[in-house]
Image (cartoon, rainbow, N blue to C red; front, side, top):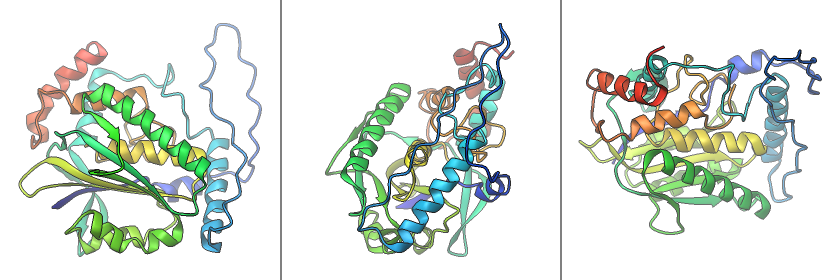
Length: 322
């Protein structure tokens, strides 16, 4: 099998550099009459102590990510509103964002490791139904597992509505595994990855087992040699994440494994942008998925072949080029 895309929710170095020390949200100013209110952003949730079975390293990571979530929320990031009047986009913007996100890879293999470098690619997507299986480290509490399963079930139904591709949760014969692993299990995940994806490269395994803490989560999608249709995917989500960051990782990695492999700083409102403004799949992102799975496009298309078709679909979805 050929590994097609590793994608990672990154940009953390830039985000962390701008974080403020204060963690308490500042009350919003009064809004004059007739002015639409600013998008509602979630308040930070109190952290739940990690279970007793978590290692010291895992507990330290949980505290680290809880601080990051509080700081991002205090900056007005990790929005969950899906976009609104403050984030308009045109058909032309949507088409350009699609071409950049769906027809470029964010990472390439170089010297046996994954290197961040946007590289033009061909259109990839699933052609067969997805059977998705969630697996958890023993340290993940049952209540958290139930919340994650419910979130993935809602997301799968949402993506199915946009793409027409059936996505179901399954316990066996899965072709898309979502591994929610604590630090110890992630470091030792090599044999499990090789079992799930026979022939997976040493570089892909090393990317997972050697993950630095600035990388929140990742996904690999695979296709057979000579094909641009995905038939296998594995996502790795850190078990140490607090609730909103867990949901954010699930949304981005599952959506990226559908064939939206790249990020773009111009994409807004979107989770396919490393600025962390949006935590969850947006209305803009739903349209990207609708374009990707439109039958007028086909796996293997180049950006030049896809461009006029994508522009036409975007105009149909948004209503012209204005």
